[in-house]
Length: 477
Image (cartoon, rainbow, N blue to C red; front, side, top):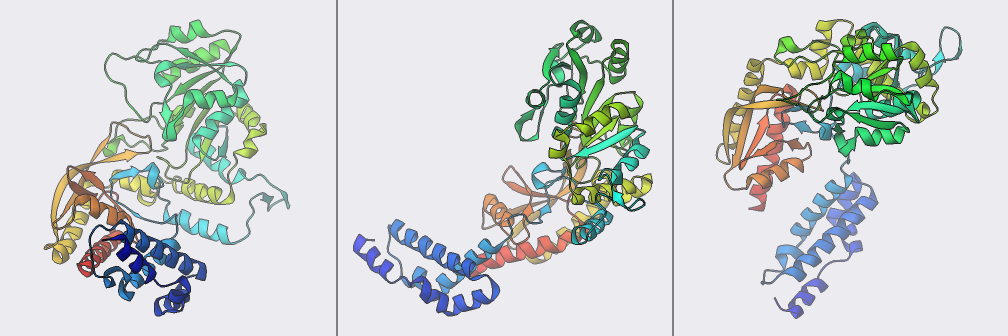
């Protein structure tokens, strides 16, 4: 297309005000704020100009300048601009504690309590018995101590904050001895040495990457030592020619030398899950029972609650941690407290916790239950989309995620989707861009929907989403 033709086409584009007064603009202003509609029109016009200028072949002007084309593009833009940035979606990846997808789902009881606390005044820092100012952590401290056997507890915004606060309180300006094999990197590229530097503590590495012995700690201890730190390798596994010092040995050494011992557990679980086919992991009560001075772990991983960093341990050290001014900068709000309290209350009965806390339920769901769910979805999709999609039910493996049980692969069932007239990548893109995004797993030119992490009430949504995608494709064709 010659430049003269392009300029002629561009002159035919309507103005923003014209489109605002037109049927599409009038209709959209009833549904969306005016500024959203204006921006949708502006973006559509700009996109259309770019398409005309980039074109190297001739086409019918009505193809992109006609009212139907412009109106549909404006509606798409308005929907996109008005969509919430943070939105619910369907996790079909098979990763239960998917950090990018919000990690743990809250139990129904926690969601109900959260809604009530969010919309009403509450006794966040008010003692109802005495009628005076209270302590916000009293709502969960007693529960945490009862469930774990700890003398005292405090909660901050996440586990990295918990580690930073504890190190700053107990070892600022002093050496903290850590095995080289435990200098882990956690989510978002944050590393234990960096958190330690931020706390003001001085890192002293001992041992080698694969082997650390008790004598390595013994030889490193001096008058400069403030803390012995053990970091649980919850997000990776070391195999082969390896050796590490147990927490019990470290606690005994700490008592002998008068040095406190801390364990960064990372992803702490209150219930033993090995009977459900998961690898053996130390539970929080077992860690506390070892006599460790302080232990920290996340609230939104295996615990199945909201994002939080939980610090448990001996009262003397916890009192110092609570009094640290940094504590206020890391404190949690009423919403986190509400969700955490509700989650912890479910742990007062083991069977209740296993049935009602989504993380535990997803971890322990029997394969036959997942298989039945997969077959229901398979029947739904084959009935509507067999001419558009190749659909197959296959065995697969799910993951725990969230830096927990790194060696655990949970048997699961997945549907493999392969479009007949679209690329798998395009189907994945459209699923991600739908009103209720569906996030699957791309593998070898196939899109897998792992049914371990798909809930029963989401099957219909997947069907509707695919329906909208292929209806949209038909309308474009």
